Length: 382
Image (cartoon, rainbow, N blue to C red; front, side):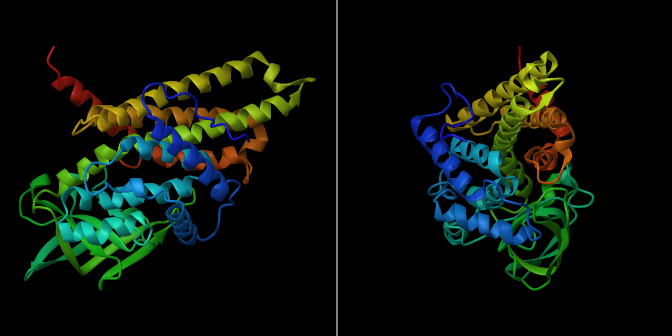
């Protein structure tokens, strides 16, 4: 692989500083994560990835400095580069931002000073604990209960499918603190992972990723922001980070295209390289078309946010929807072009096939993104 970036032109959406950051992120990712074999210990691999990214100075963009707005395009170019090489490293990077962002948005100055510099330095490992067995897409259905205990709070309940469960040093947790039904009674809390009463049960997803259930039994917690504003903090966090999920998907799709190109140029069938078959050429063109269109939506969403938009629900949903669905199609075609070799463990496209699937679910499933887009369309005045 040459030093040239494989991602293509970003048009007017990136500034020179973003292009420089993208090149650095790509070189760091190649140096640390290219050719990494999936390990049995996802937790250890995640910690190693966080430490490597921290040493290279790439975690700083996950928290706003200090403490204004995130530069979303910086997150986008880093996640695209990490997605190209390692889904696990990409997730390790992303959760640092996702798990700490409620603190950046609503935390006290003391909470921000405690958490955000440590996240940027890789000294604290974040987790974002909102999903429950009966509250996934419908976060208003959260049942984890927060009860006042003097000047503090205690949490009781169960969270599921939590990234970095068992690895995190702190959790930001959405819990029901009031008697109001739906979203009005929800608040966001900061919880030390070593707090008494907190237990973790590991789960095993299809791709390398530390995931688990987190149970709270009388766990001490600290309120983030105002009581009753928890869902607003959770949704604002998801709204901000959705375009970056699309960026990771674009990185994975670009890697799949590059792997497919290498394969069809060298694999011979019927006396000729596969690349000479018209059907293969059409498949390659479809893959490039899917990725190029989706990537523009990702860049546009991040550019819109960085230009001062307070929220980007429509742009973020379009970016995540288009990029994750396109990446799934692209990677599926790459596996097909590889034939039997594409479904063998150790093949890059086989790993990508497992890694990309979760992106269409987490931080708002594809169907939820469609609802967000439609609702934003219906709000428009013509």
